[in-house]
Amino acid sequence: MLVSGIDDGYFPVKYKGKKGKAPLVSVTYNDYKLIDVDVDFIYVDGDEATIKFNNLRRGDVSILYSIIVGGFNYIIPSGKYIIFYGKKPNITEIDRALKLHFDDKRREVILYYISNLIKVPTKKGSVYINTNLEISKAIDIIEFYQVNSKYPEPIQTAHVIGKGIGQHVNSS
Image (cartoon, rainbow, N blue to C red; front, side, top):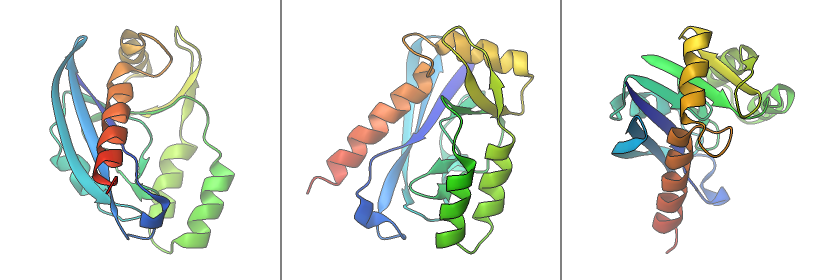
């Protein structure tokens, strides 16, 4: 089974409000072997991350490190997915920020997914997920890729690549 990790990357705070772009990264693993990397760019606080996500090359299952990417851009997941959080997000603070800065459907979408996170035990500690897989299957996938920490390798790799790309393109 091919498993992809999805994460965004670094962007300067001055990019908030669609003033710049952040990388959106998909890395795909076959067992413990990295076999593909795909990158696109999303507007910080934009609303096109779902389209970009759907156009990224991905494996059979995608592990998303949050559905909130590039500030408050957001992904509505498709295909087989696991939305992953290492700790429970502060829904009250997220809702407050969304109400303050946005008047569109993103608040409803984001709150729907993060309000339906469930706490699951793994070999590296409890995590929070929202998935369309059987919970036991999602836990098996997460635990298989928990090599050095509770964060599965595919999202760790996507995070490192996204951060590097974001810092590189914004270093000038």
